[in-house]
Image 1 (cartoon, rainbow, N blue to C red):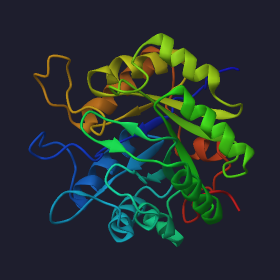
Image 2: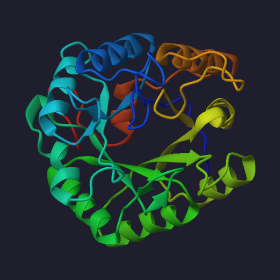
Image 3: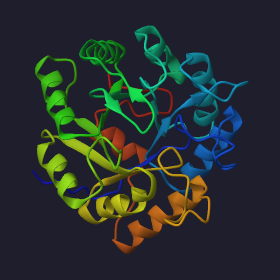
Image 4: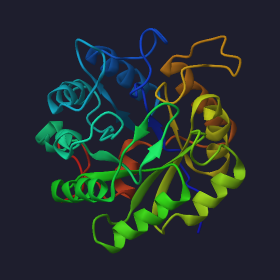
Length: 291
């Protein structure tokens, strides 16, 4: 299959579940901080944002749709076309009603996409539990709600599971895949692993590559050079340099991606183009899958 895309998908991941203010003062945790970082990124140029919400008091990850609603409202008041994906992560939450909570937002607060990790996996210190039933239930809810899955892949078997979900009618093309490399227990950050995963993608798929930690820059650079998209932000890497002498900001990381794109003669993909390719509603008041 032809892996190249003319324009560069930039999937911005500003917060994640791990970084804290103690680790880096630059990570946006409060609602206003997340909104401000996303809007600044949107002015620079991003295609979509992958949101994680944090509890107002504790700063811990939260699944609550009310928190997501406030973040989404703040973003869409200034960037109504931006593609918004909400996290449905299983790292901290084990019940379906918790993980699916943001999917029940409606109207101008409805997310366009929800993350769907396609198997269980181990991180350095914790596991992300994604049973077959949980994956299928989340996919089913998204299908009912006309919200598009952001398919998260850490190993080649997860791509095979996406193909299985398609045969079951739980997901449908066109697909968007995040391919994440460098996690200790999953596909590693090198060309061979990248090639294997790309070769396995189903037809009619858009894709972005992420590198965890110090592998973020080289894996993003590979993706830019190969004609793919990138996932980038403090969720995956808080450092500017391999020696960990300088803490990055989200703007730093995004500006570097734009520099790489310019060197490679690529423009970033505007949200409107991504919406068109993914059969999405046009934004500006209508969100998710096109009716």
